[in-house]
Image (tube, rainbow, N blue to C red; front, side):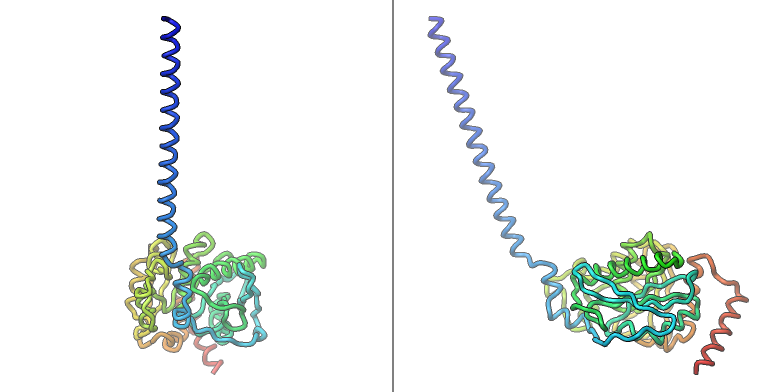
Length: 333
């Protein structure tokens, strides 16, 4: 009797283990099927969403956003030298560095659309007379630089170029007082570079810049929103400048129709810096700030830099510097 009961218990135990094993197998199989279906749905969803790079590098968009001007490489003028920059994909672009003094503050400058670095050969001396060094960075596909400008690589190129120029200043023992400046299209580069390299710069200068990409693109003739592109997928300048808390100076033309004044005002109000200034130049449109501002255009930039670095002149020194600059301007005519 005892043996029979023991045998029965063994049979029941074996049966329960078999049932348990079968349940585990079925559960595992069900889990695998569920995971497969989930992954299949996820893959379907991903394949139905266009790649961001494909969206923003649409030829229709690129033709509207970028207006590269090709030019043969020229020899740099006096007090200037060229720096070759190799981008992440091996393409070569460049920078022209105009130098005043190794102890002077330096501006790393991103120019506007349709411009090239050689255009600044006549403008750079005005910066030098203010005691500033100026490094003008070129974009891929512009001037003598290689490649084709793409929205997907535009900002990463700018950061690569900034790093190369900053290292040049350091290697050649120039002052660590470095400012980033961007004009028009270059404002997107300057804002992104300033945010990504905040510890390496003293401040940010924006001329004729924009806060929101989509309204600007619509003005230029392309409706990015209709193409499924959101501001976060574009330059997103306004959101970025909210996170930037170092001294910021914004210059804008009163009569700018391409990038209206409200864009600059929005940048100024959104900027996260406590020390922020905005200068509106009366009568100036998008491309005539220097013509209308004259020597004062460069002086207000120098004043902002001096205040930021703690080397601002008193009123007597400023008056003397102003008279000297006016005399130099008269001599040049």
